[in-house]
Image (cartoon, rainbow, N blue to C red; front, side):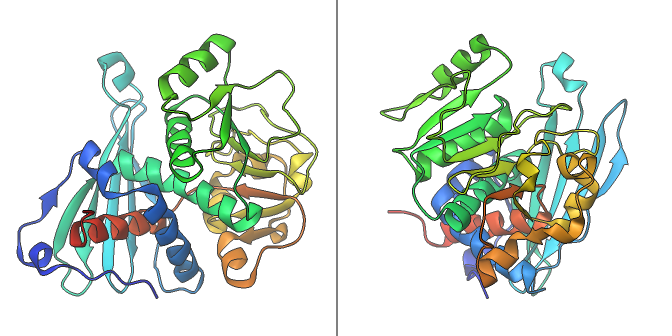
Length: 315
């Protein structure tokens, strides 16, 4: 079981609030993927409790989402507000906070930036899937989408696989070029994807809000496909051909309600295996699609990394 020593300075002092930039610095991707791997196993073994999220309406089309999780060492509560009208206000559409508490006393000890935790742990699950199913360093990855989650995935792949070339597919070549220019750093290779996806692509990650299929190539043992977008029943990024693969979900219960790709394809849910099974028992043989919908347990994994960073600061 993963437990993180809670430093006395954190337990005894007042709860601390961390900005988005500070939260990012506390959760490096390498440590995050390690924490996610252990927490996914614990979640599969029933050692982490993470109930279905609750949503209540906000003004206009907004929604407030409540997501708690608990483990023997800490508990967390992520409260995230999604307000589409903020685009007209020049403000982020997603805002919120992750409250981190000592499980022994219930005392709040940290407040982390909610969108930053969400972005990092979502990309972290994709990186964990690469380690679990591909089991090699990818030479070329395709990211379909150019939004916020695409940015986190680029950052994650550049951090863990700096030699991996990243191809990007957006709604236009101009959008792809702008995204690549904004995310090009050092010697990392990032470029728009050709019209035909190269056979050399080993990982495909879809991170859009599309209601129409954006990827539906024939399954291949040499290519891992990860569906991150399509988080509502009326959305679908992955088509029926690729869904003939071996299917996994990071949270099968959540996928039943949110995974539009699988819902619209009328997938037999008996075919969908939990990611925890692959970590505990080994991956099933064959081409793999992972559907990632997220759960507060993954936010708890990120919070553990933040605590570890504070307890054992680098340098």
